[in-house]
Length: 411
Image (cartoon, rainbow, N blue to C red; front, side, top):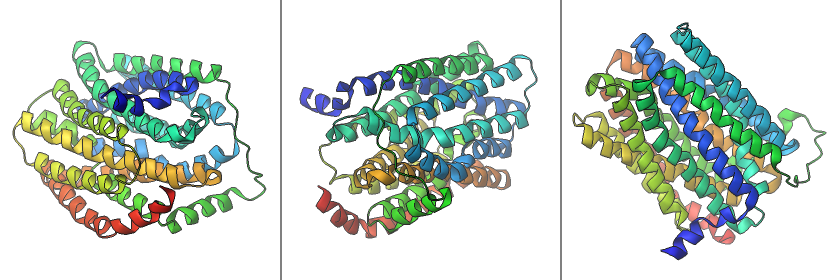
């Protein structure tokens, strides 16, 4: 057991990564507190599934269009300084949101606009942060541990944050949640400012930005491993990941609850995600990861379909555990395989495509599922999404041996 734990946490022996890991973990808890608070605020102000869908869409759609350019920037410029700018802008957005709610001026459209603003910031922050990990982990053999720990950190925050948000909203207000998130960015900015890292040699960038972007896209989708993995991740992100935006409907209507029920449902998914990342962190080697991607996608689709028809809160929470575990086991395994397979000079651009596939496609699903829930009902829409995910995963399952064969030379 101790050997497995030591293997899983070996990336923490790198001082820069360890400090960033702690600061970023605290900040991510604040981020999840804000996400849940904003979702509940939109529902409280509008009682509209469409507004929830638009908020989710605005918060993530910028990633689809801006992340590729962030990937080029990540390959060109100082990633540490770029991250400091994105963190400072995120702090400003949180403060503005808190002021609007505190002064009772907030309207649903304010939430959509500010969600879009944060989405633009995250479109640059996420792929740069993914590439920044390589700079902090000197021994590249520890990269799988760092990637698994990053996923663990994100999902532990996803487990803690919604529960904290639920109780803070009930006891205080949404304003307190937004202020907490604002404060959480200070630690990350301080750590980034203090780090003294050796920047990788930057490529000459005489070529046009769009030419570099096109080169990265062609490389990824002609790669025998990366293209197939990203395609499967898109299926999961389009059909299953948008469930978060519809959770207030289930908490408020299906279970006749309040923000605490919302926190329990999203927190259950976070528990599943944390469990999945702990499992992945103890795995040695990458040969099992293609199978984990298949199993995770099937688990997420099945549990979402069963959740959609449940009238029992305990059973629904159990299904959310499966959804969270399925999504993150797929996403984290894909991240590890992509980072393992990509050439260093294209890492920023390819990781931006990973970010698009995981986060940039989800808002399209949020918008579609939100509007379909207005026409039909949220349970019917999530049932259809879960079934379609199961059907879509079959294509990956049929090609899984080709992925395994392509990975063999790298093992």
